[in-house]
Amino acid sequence: MAFRFDKNINSHIRHGMKVGLASVLAYVVSGWSGVPYAYWAVITTVIVMQMHVADSINMCLYRFTGTAIGAGMGILMILIFPPTPIYTLVAIFVGTGTCAYLTRYDARYRMAAITVSIVFLSGLFEQHRIEYTLFRVAEIGIGVLCAFVVSVLVWPNRTTSVLLERLRTQYDQVADNFLLLVDNFLHRQRKTDPDLFFDLAREVQANRELYNKIYATERRVYRADIDLLGLQVNTLNSVVERIQSAPNLLNEVEGDGFDIIMAPELTQLGNEIADALRAIGRGEKYDSHHLARSVDAVEKRFIELREEGVIERFDVRRYFQVMSFINTAQHLGEFLLLVLNKQQTSE
Image (cartoon, rainbow, N blue to C red; front, side):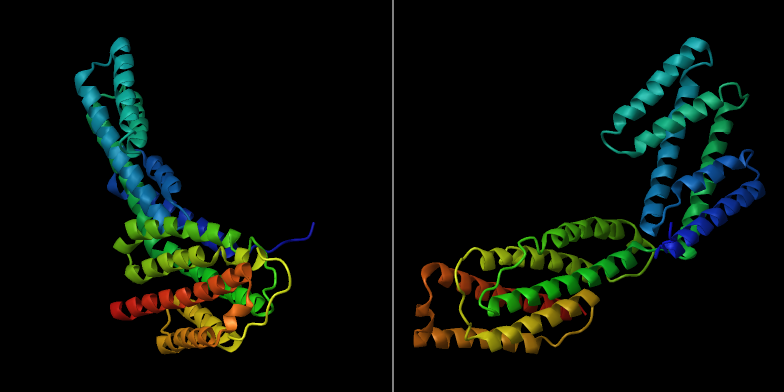
């Protein structure tokens, strides 16, 4: 079997090294701080360390807050129920059942239920049960802290970088697809793949989840233009929604198409829209005057042709097809002008 090089292998190697480093750090810090069971810190570090910083931060918060809640519940159970067999069963039922019920309000109570079980049962025969519980919280806290520090400071794999790369690729793809649509339209309304935007539309929807991760976590740790990133995500989603039905416009009318007299104006508009899309996807400055002139040129040319009676050559279905496509391109250009203006205003 031929060896296939994984382009993401460096990311996985770095992640492995980070997990190893964080685990060693957790063990050393545990020994230095004097907690009795350093392996809890190491186990916690391995659990919460994720490939991306945002996921690691979420896991750190989930693990530590869930542990703190569970420890508090465990201490309450220790204070209420004596360590007899029957009361131990009652305490397990009450503690885990209560935390499990509370997961309807917050998922962290699932971790709390696990912690209640651990601290209550593992410390059942310990002389100082509350002290034993507090040590477990300290050990897990050390593990969480070490995972957080290494994840943020050592080769941080930021979700922001992942999303920016996705956006650049997707904006390029939608620009290429739009140019293809314009070319097919101008070549006597040539048929187009009806699923041209199917995969792209699904990928664009996933951007929102990544953006929410960044907004909830990474922006609190790193400096990032969160407003620009949100504008890029929302704009791409709107653009795809506006043009994903355009292939159907080219496919629904049978028979020979027409040469489009407005081909020069529409070609220029298509090129300017594509350039604007690529610039927005990269967060680069774009001179919107070029796009504005192209939008105006299409409007003026269309009015001239209508006054000359040229559009009367189309039958009803072909008229609807041609007018709808031109209208889609023009409205897309106007929408991008609004986006570019908003982008310039926020700078």
